[in-house]
Length: 130
Image 1 (cartoon, helix red, strand yellow):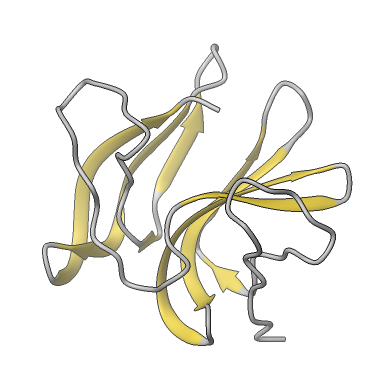
Image 2 (cartoon, rainbow, N blue to C red):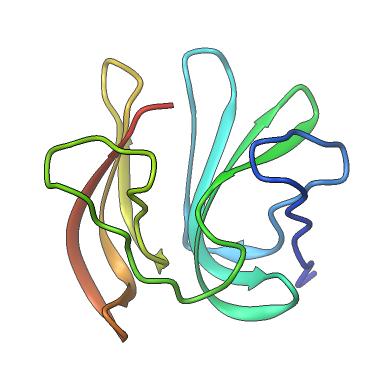
């Protein structure tokens, strides 16, 4: 209950990694059977509580912290609209909508989150290609 996360090294799967307790994020599975988890409201390192923007992948009994921050209440990092870039990151949010398209891309829309120093309802659209 109220378990804290263990982020480990970003991009590296490990038996000790764990996303930590959270509510109101989104989860899905990809075509390869990997489980994915993004955002929500919960715990981050070192034990802060707030809105999350961390992306996790679960495969073969191990979690990998894929992207996002290990701190709560982060604003988005925008690049050029319509252009994919590794540095683009959705801000912290919960109560968001998400779906996977026929190509396996994750789409995120809105939610309640953090943007430009304020917290409120969001209407931004993001695509992630695993």
